Image (cartoon, rainbow, N blue to C red; front, top):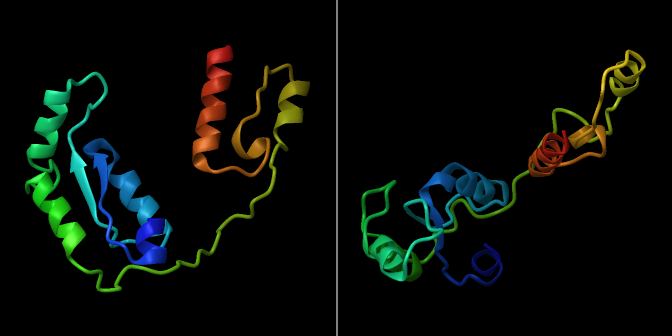
Length: 138
């Protein structure tokens, strides 16, 4: 995104189809809703070079168009300037630590572990990671 947004150099991001929504949302949050993206099938881990090449030579599972055709079009078509810029967000909740429920739970004898915004204001990925760490420790 940086190369395209700051330097105007056409880029095409390639993702697996399972990350379609995440990839598009990240682009939108960063002010690049029209970022050129191509998708290949999941999984890629454990695939041979021949199998991976078949993904690239095959069709985008989301659009049904040839992956390489989408890459070439993305690299050779100038941006029209639409969908590129910054986005302002109105946070509906403040970014504050909220561990108010922890003490009463502990006082009631309930085993309690903190994660996410109970520890510090975090994004969703940090909260998920901390929650997983707690689950694995149990």
